[in-house]
Length: 498
Image (cartoon, rainbow, N blue to C red):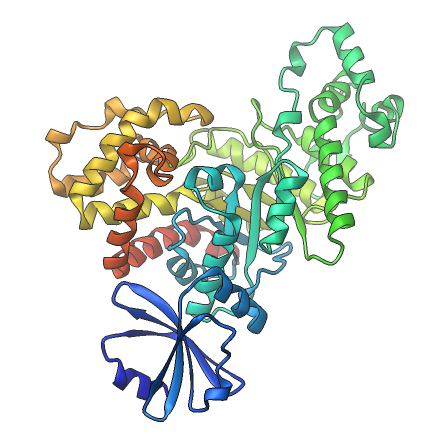
């Protein structure tokens, strides 16, 4: 029947990997002009599930339903084909593939399928949803259509990233997410080392000891003046003062994580869920002892993690490679890895993981443990690379607008990019524009202004997203090539550890 359809509609592109038979009907995706559709095809009209929304057509002794890729049809697809639902990824190597435009998934999968990494396709933080004017459900639906199109049946994860409240969890549960990244950054006490002796003791005594199910004295006794021997390496003994300081810094992080973990278990006992804790948004790197203390206390309180994101040494700025001492990173990473191995082998999670190629090399060279990498903005930048190649005028408009928005939009980021270090427009030939996507200053200016470009709330940017999406549809193959090449570069340094 597929051949019949192909002969009847020679101008349509059938995504061959999507073809699947179920209960007497063929399901597959096609591209008609610049739009893609779900086709349900059968010689028997009764075999076509008319609960899908679409237009019923006949064709040479056969029938087919041509369906929009909307939320209703995505939900029915998930019910019919379980591989299009998010699942638990577990403590396996995994890659977070954030997609701010909702059209990068196929290229992501082309790269990820060359490895044994598990894909986390639906990954979006509350902040990103607000800035892109998308919903958690739209992000999930995009992932569903992606795995259906490429015929990927090995299971993908969905990460509700940087969640702070029960309401955030509810939102992600409703959309079918399975990974919940807790962001307790507002509970971190960053200035603890500045406290006087009296203030230190006062704040320590004021910690929520009832929620911690222990006492101030017991914690000092548990952790001070002891060497903690790990499978590889040792955490040297710390003073009682350091124990108190670390508990003040992270004590409420621990109780907040416990609270949200219990909320998940109690309200959604049958929903598959795995927990990541993010402590990367702090002023100073997470010391090995701080890491040990956090996970030891969570373990005592019955909270299991699938991954943890420490604040590593050096700078993990958006959209560019790591800045710092790589040998120091590698040595500290090994100790963080040993702590993870001590408490069940959870993954170390690399946040702001886009384009950290030297870090990938360092981790891949260790051939130990499991890792989760989170990317998002780098896919947006590859979309802009494609625009720069295919529609230079549109790219110039976006770049100039981004320069004007940069000072405002960079406030929530730690970055060093400067618009003044990008050549002025009148000095740039069209063939120079693509090269800007390899320049750290241009990458960061474009990276952090994505919300202003995509949400359309400002009259000056109201049609940027529409024009970008149109360009990327017209040049779908070029876009996928750019993305696939870029993510091959991201993933290849890890392959030696597989």
